[in-house]
Image (cartoon, rainbow, N blue to C red):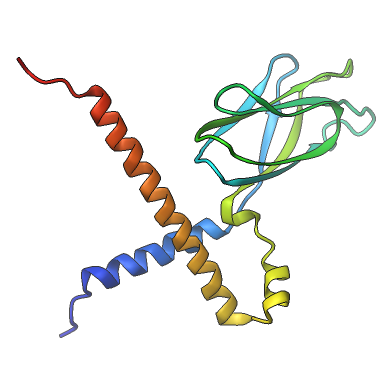
Length: 180
């Protein structure tokens, strides 16, 4: 008969699986309409590094080269990045306040055609780390490198849990009213 896993072991394994899932970052494709704006947002806590690369996809427009405009704003509406007449670009910043960060894209050229697609690779927190450079600098590889990644991911998850708990307490204390 197999012994039941302890709650601490179960929690540690769950954290490791979540951490491993957090380490991968994927790009998204956005289809921009002929007119109007397409935005993506992410809720991010303060003091987090954000890196993003964006590029037009020309498969649908082999003969013309439309351009886009990009604007990235903080939760309080501060402009963190603005670019016009772009076909490729990137932005990077460290968040100064917690909340929803918004990146908006629109076609700004006369060659609008039937809309275009852009590739957006948005990375935050530990996904922005250059693990190859860290491995070379610290002379680690294989399992040790993976354990280091997991350690950083678990720390990130722990900080996020603290942030979420603080937000929950703030929400309940601001909405609580005594029954008279």
